[in-house]
Image (cartoon, rainbow, N blue to C red; front, top):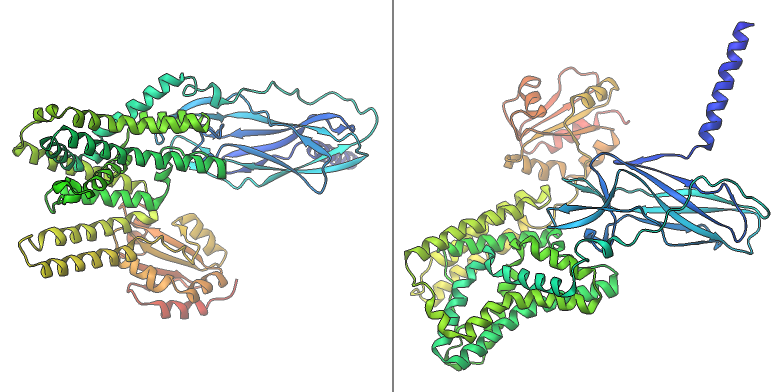
Length: 591
């Protein structure tokens, strides 16, 4: 009797728990975010008002971007309700919690964010003509979630909510009360609180600061030489050519302003200063430009100043050269611009298009102002320091600064592209050395052309070899994990380990000759092989220790296949073992 009573109590407890669980919101966890939906009322009448709350819990030190005006790439938190097959519910504007501000070092500006535990409310009104029914709503969630060191864009999918509609008196106590809508952070933030005049002064100072960027210094000697030469030809010529140079600077910022207008009107997004550095091709290109300019500062080659640039003989081409030189100077300022420039851009994006365009152009005016003043007052050029050994030492010092900037840019590239870009940088440096050092200007023109055509051809060939984005691997490689390997062995699952290192060129050959083969990749998937990419780049990595102590191998590349039921693994130490590996895989049982 006692056993029966205990059984009844246990069953009752289980049923009670299930009943509570059935009524509780279903919590989902994606990456570092836990979220769930809650309705304000269980049942809503026609013409009634209610809301859906989406609750979020973020792990410590993680946050969402709160505003599209300041979020990089427009990746702020967005909630998009979508009814399935009906138009019964009319949703109002989402109500977000009050955001806070953090300083983003990568972007050089403050950004409004939401973190911790919070809720976003989606108010809605039911159509007056609606009868009794259940409306299914899918609420899509989109947004980047970031910490102080990284950002992720999880696939949140959508939350399914069933809204029950029933005519009559369905009044009940609400589960929550709608808060008052918060003002847009973009309108209350620190940057937007600047007055128009203060912001325009900030933009002018930002442009002025571009002239002291190390990236611009390689072309400054040419610019100064042009200014001095023009001053000798008279004030009128000096002013005209100076204005042409300033026009080139302003043309660059006019292009930025035009891009901003197109992005806002066509794509409903904004041009953020720094977005260009999220494009790996742009970053790699600017890094290579810094390498070439550093070699110029070291004297490996010289930049001649043709008449189109110096403006000799009164040629009209000189004006085009001056515009081009100004445009180039503005481009070179971008890789190492100060955070003040990002702040000026951030303010501009929160303004109407006309004011935003004006602010961007004022940045250009700030950069062009010193050149306009120097050309308008040629007497100032006579006060420039006389050339000497100090100038050569200064140039070479700047060359090292430019190399540091190049390294910083390469470090910002995705991990799978850095090494290839470094290899290309070495080849590019060799080609520049060929161009400037293998022949002198006194050499016959035919010899100069032959050498330089070979240098350009070699650089182009190296670009095709190293710079294209790497193809995605055909094999789903996992990081070395002794526990995962042990678990696979206990489950009689084969394990393939590719011991490699970042500095191992032969390992790259193995990847291209063996693991790029589709037949091998298909067999690995078909046989259920656990594929391990064992990184031994550093001596204290777990894979490095296992390679020496567990498998007694002296170096890489080594490829080991652990076959279920066999104590001794199969090993390959060469570069062309694809057929042998294929044969071994074919002998495995299908999983």
